[in-house]
Length: 415
Image (cartoon, rainbow, N blue to C red; front, side):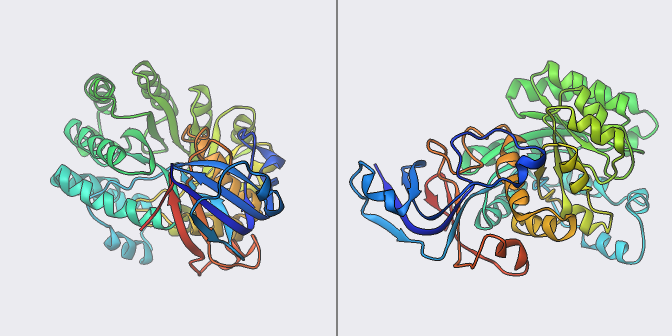
């Protein structure tokens, strides 16, 4: 059995014997141990505690020991909302945004999701896999240990299945914990813009049966938004997904009060994501449910939209997660360190709240909290070892610095 011992850890962060989903004031409670040790056996957290308790651990000390003086150890980030399988970047649209064009105006001239769909359908499965593998590897070096990946740039039966098969291959080959989400209802293809029901029928009758048969997805997602899928259409698609064993996760309330939060809660969604546009009813509906509200601050930043009302959501008792929304159009970065930084700086989340939301609650939003999201005995050893830092608060404070020394995914250091 391979053993690794980290000693003199300045602070062992998010240490828990129990790991319930956190909501409201609980998000600000981040249990830590100062001057700690952490023992890893193979791919699993085996023991931890204050350094003075190390001699009482009834195990022979491993040959491999790391002195972590001055450094923090955190659970790896759990990024529960991404679109990292795509064929090309969209920096030309970035220029259009700088010139003043809106998201809707760019979409109207063939940009946006439809642009990515054209390029994706022209790419081979191997090309998509290789590009996504490079992105995934880069994200692991930035501390991401679990990630959800959506389809949604195919918008044809062949294209959506191609994306999901790429995600399945990533899942089989990567050490990261990966969840797959079917987002065929991302937008309406041009040929269905005047016949929404025909595209919904295509999703339900032709895509979902194959996805279920080949076990290509864990979740079903719908972009519930004005000009995209209505709340009623969202509920119809979610019900069909549920019948095929897929649990709902909803793109909700990004651009308008779309009813996506209410539709998601009614469907028993694991999470409703975005939430830039919220009113009292949407907030109270989310707070009164078991659904997690996933905030994507880098998307709001990139689109120059108002940031999500994190404080109002937390104060109302909502369960909040943070994710990157990594995609080529509205959030071309999967850096969860930046997500945490931005959540503190722009959404006034406390460092403790942001770290909990990006680790434990992110794990809950992917249903992998039994393995990841906290420093707990028996969980997988997916951790971040920081550079020497003066305090936990320094991580979001020093937003332009790479403060990661090493990242471990399931017992193996990322090279």
